[in-house]
Structures are given as C-alpha cells and as structure tokens.
Image (cartoon, rainbow, N blue to C red; front, side, top):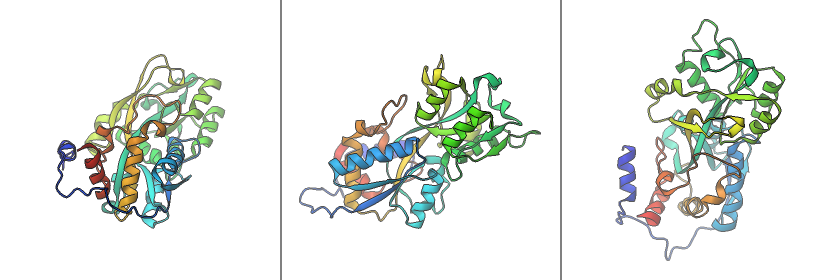
Length: 311
C-alpha cells in the first residue's frame, strides 16, 4: 500500500472493525524495556523522556536501555531482549526477519551529520578520500547509513578510499578534536550537545551530504529525504543541506494491544514533552507524521487507536 493510500485509509474515519476503549478493562501494566542508543545521543534522550512521561500519564513502565543504536536495537528486539526499539527507517527496512516488526509510530527525524575540522580544508564528501573517517559505533544506524552514503558516492571504490573506523560517538568526538580522525558521521537531532560543545572549542564544518541523495534514493527508494540543518547550529552562518532519516518506535506484533494503545496516547497527548530540550529543525510526533511508518506496518492496535483519535 502506498504512503498516500495508507494515510487516506487511516484518516478516512472507517468505523467498521474499530475497537472502542469504553468498557474495556485495561490489562495490568507491565515493565517494558526500550532499546535506545549511546549516551549523549538523541535516542537515549528520547527514551528517557518517553519513560518519564509514559509512567506519569500512560501508566506504562519503560526502562530506557543504552545501546549501540539502531542495528543493535533490532537484534535485541529480534532476540526478545527488549520489548520496544528505536531504529532508523533504513536500518529497519534491512532487518531480517523484517516481517516480524511493527511500528507504534514515527517519532522524529534524524539528521545525518558529517563533521570535520574547519581548518583542514575539507569542504565536500569527495575530500574524504584517503582520510580517516569514523562511521559511528559498531551496531549503530549511523554507521550503516554512512556506509551506504560512501558507497553511493563512489568513495569506497575510489583509488584512495577513506580509511573507515567504527568509534562510539563520544570517542569519535574526542578523536576528531585531537586530530586522530579527519571526519565523523553522526545521525541524530540538531544541535547534538557534544558536537555543539566541540564547536565551542574547535571550529568545525558540517559537510553537505545531499549530492549523494539521488543515488541513495535510486538504490533505497523512500528511505531518505533532503533536509536542512538550520543556520546558527554549530556556528554555521547559513543553513546546511543534509540527508534526513525517519526514526521509528518498533515492537513485535504480539505486544499487548492495551500497551500499544497507551503508547499511542502518550505520543499524541504528550508530544511536546518528548522533544529533547534545545532541539531545532524538523520534529515529528504530529498527527500527519506519526502514522507514516513505511516500510514497517503499524501495530494493529496502534492503527486502530489512531483511527479512534483522528478518524
């Protein structure tokens, strides 16, 4: 089903088959574990906010677990080690088995950020040839997306390809400042506090990643969008074009229906409290975007609850 058809279907207000909440006895709440991301990153920030708000207003206990990120979260969810997982949409699309994933909602957008030192003369992705580049932590969605980007840009097959390493985010920031690496990739909200702090100590530049976007979309349709990091972020005088990737809140299809409905209510009613402080740019958690979870289908109970709330 196409995205347009899906949206029309959900917002059409079809009452047949909808399950009303009135008169239903809610299932006793149980503790859920949410796979998030690295300390200092948007995933863990969002997970901690969701945990606090869900406990207060939704009657759901959620433990936000620090992990390596999207790929790690998907593996943990597949193994049954977590009940919920945050993941980039492109990582979720590549997950196996992908048919065992459902989404509670599309929660916000990540910005793919390629950070270099301003004084090194690196101004484009092509300048990364022969340079030491941190893709991100092993098991992170950032690393998976960065690999795709470098490959789509022809850098991995160049005569002098980048020397890639996988470094945890905080270590990569330190390495860039000390000159141990030449660039780092990071996928998260803007501004990311650790990068903003680095920019206060060492002038940095964010490279425009959008020249590779057409080839990425040819290979991976609907996984990426063009977006812009606002002017002023990290000291930039002008907006910086970059690639955006949607973030999904994922579960298994057998997640209790009542829990799925409660989570939907939290995402709708407490959206403003789930945005990390200081975040700029495009944020989701809006009626029109929460249901746009392609390529992953919505949890059936979550889909019904969106109909009940917005149909």
